[in-house]
Length: 560
Image 1 (tube, helix red, strand yellow):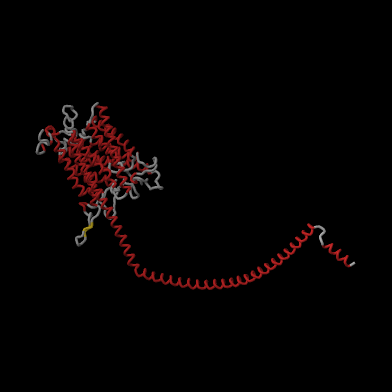
Image 2 (cartoon, rainbow, N blue to C red; image 1 turned 180 degrees about the vertical axis):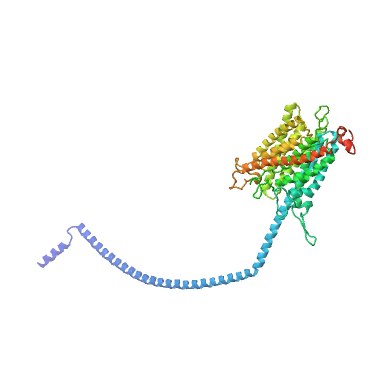
């Protein structure tokens, strides 16, 4: 029975099939492997946990050491920073002490350098201005040669010496008058005192230089200004000479020259360039803007032209001039043309020199603008008169063209510094018509003006003064540039409204005042001289020629 039980048990354990027995064996092995793997994982976890605990302990120790090190470094940095600040403060204190010790010497040295540079710049500017005005004044003086050539060429050969003598005496006698009293009335200022009508200081050049007890002289700019303005005075006097040519007596003409250069012209200059009542300003002026006559269309040329007109009218025409029995044609066109070119050349000193300085870019560009305007007006007016004379006489008139060129130069003299080049061209063109119309009118009135002195200088001078306002390059008919040149009256951003109207009033008054003043005193001189028989040469002298009767040798040209 026990045997049977063992067999039964064994039979139960033995697989009933071979494949089933193999699967059971595999499952047994897998179970064993899983058990081993679980045991290994547990072992690894225990080892990792142990190492992590050790790392945490070590990291906590490191953090503690790092904190201690940071504290040590912070303490060291604070000490180093304090030491460095102390060192810097010591260096700064030492530098301040050094600067304090040398400050006086350094400032004195720098100030001396700055002063020396400023003085050098001022000296250079003064030298440049002197060079510019001396050159321009010499050009204006050279215009006397042009006047002499034009006037002598326009007249008959038997009076050439007399005409040349009058031109030379104008310069020499005018110089004495300008030196003695002319400058005094026009510009003579003492202690800043300037009058509305005329001044009364610095006669005979007194006050132009200062001298101390040791004989050391201190110069001034008065000599320069005296020279430049003297050249203009001589030009104004010479204009009159042409209007009375070929029949005026020399003594009577000398008397008028004295009055012109010592009274008539200087007072006109003071009213205008001398900052008198026409100049504009708060002290005494008809308008705040004042007149605009850049280089003297009215001041110089109209003044001389009106004097020539009065002289020509009072002295009377040359014997036979309007009888048609004798030729009064110019005896030398080459002299007229030569004189015209000399005058044109000298006019650049006349107009460009009226910038009165050459130390800034603005003055340089203004002088260039003036030169261009002067050239355009002269050329345009000369061509217009040539065309007009051809239309009238159907022949070319070179003498008329020369006078047209001079008329254009006179027309642009006042506005040359405040008009554009296109305006300058039109001013010259219109000046040609004014010249020709005035010349023809005087002949109809039988006023004998041998060189058209009034038509060229008087009529075109008045036109130039008026054109200086009409064609001013200020905006519209409200703003005005005038003496401000490239800017407007009042300056950029503050242009004075109504300045154009004020300038128009002032320039019209300039024309009226100069014409009336010059005419009044010219009549006051010429009429008594005519009544006294000291002005007009007698008929016999005019017939023979002033050269033959009054000069030695009796002829200007020995071969004639």
